[in-house]
Every structure is written in structure tokens, then in C-alpha cells.
Length: 90
Image: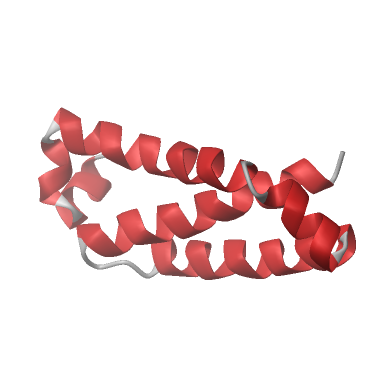
């Protein structure tokens, strides 16, 4: 955590830490509402493949983030994929 706080000193605030944790869950909750209709329209296989690409973009953005907003955006993108892909694998 010290290296993370060195890179993102704004994250010393507990509200910001909570936001970082919650963004991936909020995006996942929102996309879970549409994952069924998306998979019906494009097929489960394509939805899972598109979801994997979206997750990769989000993870790359998180890994390469140099500003806090980039980290939050990456987590939102990665979280958006979370329920879309996993909901179709059942």
C-alpha cells in the first residue's frame, strides 16, 4: 500500500478508497441488468468474447494509470465487463 499511496497520494482519503473499491461493483451491477438481452441479441459466445476485450481494455488502463481518474475509469470499464461475461458463463 505504501507504493500505491506514493503514486496516488489522493487515495489517503478513506472516501476515495471506498470509491475505488465500489466502482468495479457499481459498474458490474449496472451491466448485469442488460447482459441477458445482449447475449440474446449477439449470442453468448460473442458476448463473452466482447466482454473479455472490454475487460482487457479496463485492466490495461488500470495498469497504466498515472492519474487517479484513469484508475477509476479503468475500474469502471473492467467492472462493466464483470457481470456481462460472468453472467453468460453459467
